[in-house]
Image 1 (spheres, protein in one colour):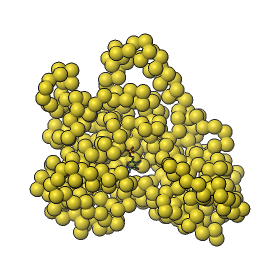
Image 2: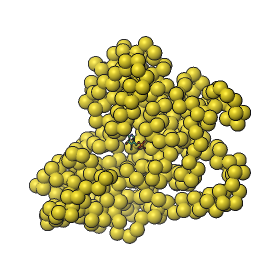
Image 3: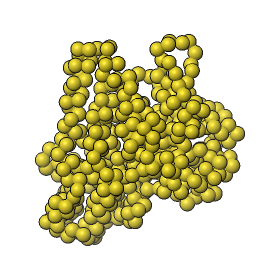
Image 4: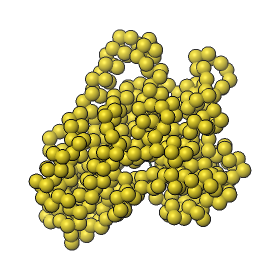
Length: 413
Ligand SMILES: *Cc1c(COP(=O)(O)O)cnc(C)c1O
């Protein structure tokens, strides 16, 4: 394990993924450890979006739906993501936002179990997932109940024969805890319930195998580890065995079997297409499309190996060098139970993170007391980990976080 800056530089020398950082626009001196919230831009995106603006929209206009492949983007971009999550190339569609896709797959799951009325999730799940379930339960008005557990250890007791669906996020957005997808899915299926996984912090962060785990539905984000840009379209996976059978309530024309037949009644496409709703945001789709090309040459095994090393280095350096400053590890210590992020709790987490950001080390704060650092292996270097801890130590030693300017909260934290 590296103990000084030179050791960290040596690890970077030996890193098989080191060449990939060059693809990104990251200004000198910026130590970006927030790619789990908003991935940075790649240079190729400027060109691709520029071409879409100037040529496809600017010159060719409506012909581009066919000639530039706009119409097929939900599938062509979906196929690139499918390769990262262990799905068949026709089993992922890129569309809408994660929240909206959750609404669709959860509604589909509930309709598969009409005689059951419980949705199980974790209390610590990302709030939008819980809010969407609440909203759908109220809208469906069939007495659905949201049952929240504090840990997947409670699944055994919580998933009884009244449970229609279990929806979990594979890597917890705050703690970074990683669930065993295959094991949990099997337990949920054994209890007769439908399994939905949110891959917001998994896709592009670690190897995922949806098909091997026999998952029913999955959703995930385009703007985190997939670097698709702010508000990038999200993705939805539906197991091939279900695609022709389940329905979802946002039955817009892009989900129709023949949208341009302009028929007055809805006839769901027999494929993953039925999970589309309306016209996709093409500028955002092409940005995500271009951003995904980098994955062609990336081994997910090597990605995971580097991610684990980055996180282990961060934990050991913080615990060694910042000892006595009130930080405690808030992520699983066991790397096999952790995603690609590390959190430390501190009672003054908010101003400490603001002071770090002022020093160009960008992590984020998660209420109430969490300092969160994401280690995206495509562009984060071992020396960045070393330097981040160095800056953290300075912020703590100098107590500069006590300055008033670091107490002010913006609308987005
Ligand atoms: C980031 C994230 C989301 C975001 O949903 P949006 O609809 O894109 O705002 C949803 N779920 C989880 C678990 C997330 O981490």
